[in-house]
Image (cartoon, rainbow, N blue to C red; front, side, top):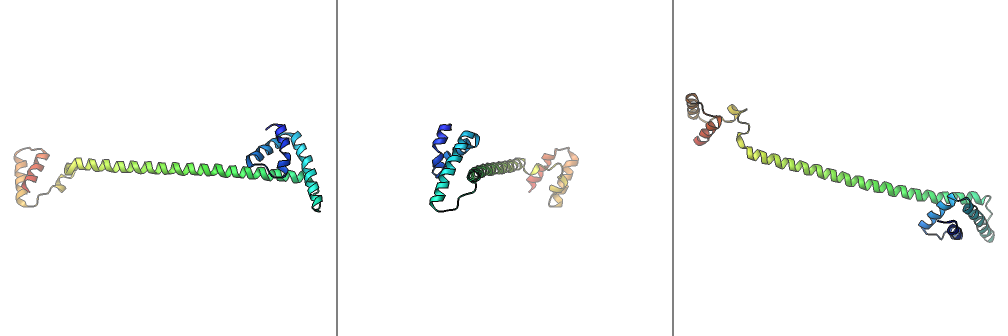
Length: 170
C-alpha cells in the first residue's frame, strides 16, 4: 500500500468501514510509515474529539494512546486469528498423517498375516516334522509301530518315505 492509498483510507478506518484485509494492510502500513501515522493521529484526534463534543461526552485525555490501543487490539486479533488458523492447519495435517501411518501399518500387518497364512498352507503338516518327529507322528496302534520299526531297521528310508507309509496305513 502506498502513502496516498493509506491517507485516502484514514477516515474509513476511523469510521470502521474498511474490509478486514484492507484494514490489516492499512494498519501494517501505518505501523511502518511515520508520516501516515502522524496524519492518522491528527485526523483521529479531530474526528473523535468532535464526535465526543457533539454527543456531550467527556473528552479523552490522550487520543494518541487511545488510537494506539485500538490499532494494537486490531493487529493482535489478526495475529490470534492467523495463529489459530495455522495451528488448525498443522493439527489437521498431523491427524491426516497419523491416519495414513496407522492405515499403512495395518495394511502391512494384514499383508504379513496373509503371507504367513499362505506359507503355512504351502508348508503343510511336515514343516516341523524333523524337529518334532517323535511327538507329532506317533502311530495309533502297536501293529503300526512294529511295522514302522521293522521297516526302518531293515532299510534306511528317508523321513518322508516313512511319513507316506504311515499315512497309507490310516
